[in-house]
Image (tube, rainbow, N blue to C red; front, side):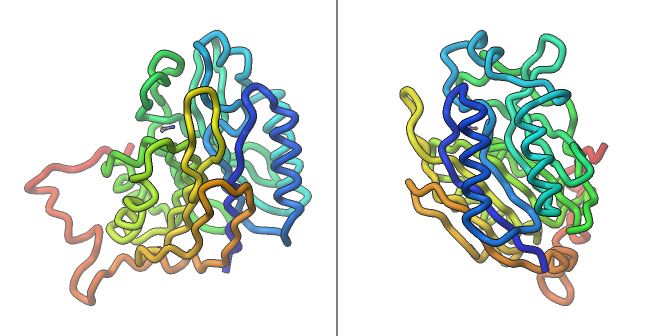
Length: 264
Ligand code: ACM
């Protein structure tokens, strides 16, 4: 069994130290989890005035105060963390998600589908759809508006992901319902960690959700509250892809009719 903790909070724009402090306080508010999932751009905040402001609040994956703080938590709690991360690489910016464990930075995913003005700030992701094998099970990542694209979820399922960690800064309210369907269709767990609060002209919708492979909402946050939302799950359930004894979510696909997905 694995204890999953969704950290729902309102990252402050450009205040990485305050964001680290809030994360530490929320983690300290409950007994340890095996995996913590944080919102999108949890180091930097979201609603940048322009690209220059985003550059100012971005970090590289080396010598990052935010990543160092996450690794310190991972070591102290013997846990894994997935978090949104405003990443600078060379002179490019990515809306990224990192997977961190006691051993350090394990992997990075860069958001494939940019939302609205993100298109003026970030490059589209160039690292594909990686799945990482951890002692808890296989973990894939999506970031916020990626939710709109069924192909990404399916590719992650076909690559064996048992849980999709989904950092989000949702401003629309469709996603929390849609992920229930994606969980059923792909027979995996989804942990959508959405932020709260208001930033400039944007209001975020909270209501983070942890969903089972049967599409059951195991936990759902409130719209406004900043909270560690915790629940224990058996990730091995996501290894069973049978819908009925004679129907399999992946093996019954008719790629001969509608083509196949790129699993590279
Ligand atoms: C979003 O992708 N942050 C809505």
